[in-house]
Image (cartoon, rainbow, N blue to C red):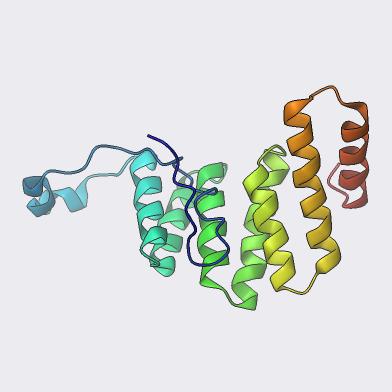
Length: 171
């Protein structure tokens, strides 16, 4: 299934930050939805990630945050849940939510420094917080990482990325 890159409310980064990558488990049958015992079954992390993404798509950001936080309580190293929680917080808006989203997305790029959509989302968060210099740095990282995807051995791009990471004390 192709990833949906259409514009969403907020900044348009929600499609890129989809924790499930656009694919998920098969749909439940109508009888399964009516079964009262389903509430006692444990959902798999993939099913929870899919449910969280569906909630974000429906703009139910608080419910999506609860789903992602539940996943993170079970496994605090789950990058898709971190990314999803950061996305839900970012799209919900408000200064405190943006700061929390920044922390979660920063954790994602610390663990996976090649995640381009997260850098773009961080740039958007910094813009909304009025931190233009930080936003420009994140945009430069996106440009450098795109260049490194095309030419992994490009010495200038590797050097520039190293300088940016050292400046932000991420290296």
